[in-house]
Amino acid sequence: MNLFSQNRTKTDPAKVEQVKTWIYELLQLDPDMVVSISQLQCQEPGCPPIETAITVLSQPPQLFKIHKAIADIESIDLIRVFQSP
Image 1 (cartoon, rainbow, N blue to C red):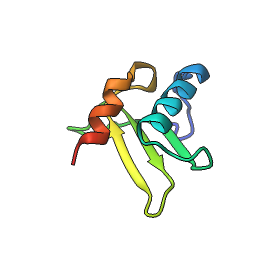
Image 2: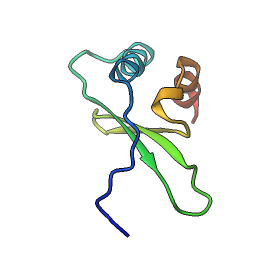
Image 3: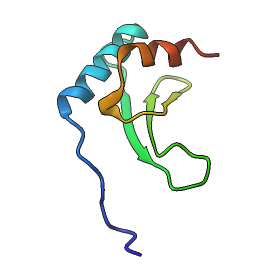
Image 4: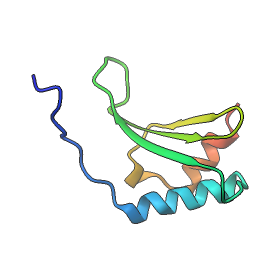
């Protein structure tokens, strides 16, 4: 097993920027606020195969997870996750 192999598909940078734009708009974030988006692959049982983690580096930091690849995220997915308790 090669622990350093990178079998990741590249995410379209334009889609990443679109998702970030939606995040800033929906959460009404200041443009200086840092938002990190990471697409993760899970091999553990019961874990979704691909998940997108969104971190807003506020005080305290806010973490949101969507069980989709970045390329598949639409604004409604963000609305749902931001409205969840």
